[in-house]
Length: 107
Image 1 (tube, helix red, strand yellow):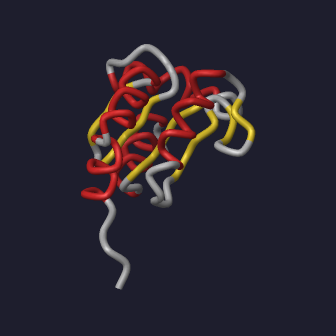
Image 2 (cartoon, helix red, strand yellow):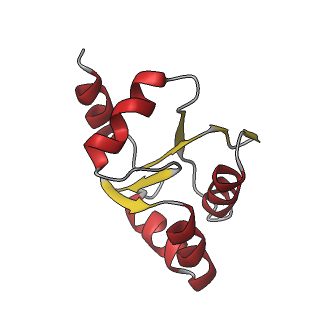
């Protein structure tokens, strides 16, 4: 499968996905740490992709998203943005609202 197709499928298949350096439990940069903490604080499960162990995604996601940096948070198939936007939205309570709206209620 083409890498752009893989990225497209990852975003389509996950209501909330964070492309970051490292993992939420072991972030590999300060920006990824702040972003993953903000997303975790919203209380919903989310997917993540470690761009350090996925060099093809690291190289191609900025082209796909037209967003040059990591982390990148996608909610409901839409790019939310990077660390500053994620942190700002979290502080205003907007991040939890967006994530809750994208995650279907468990039956």
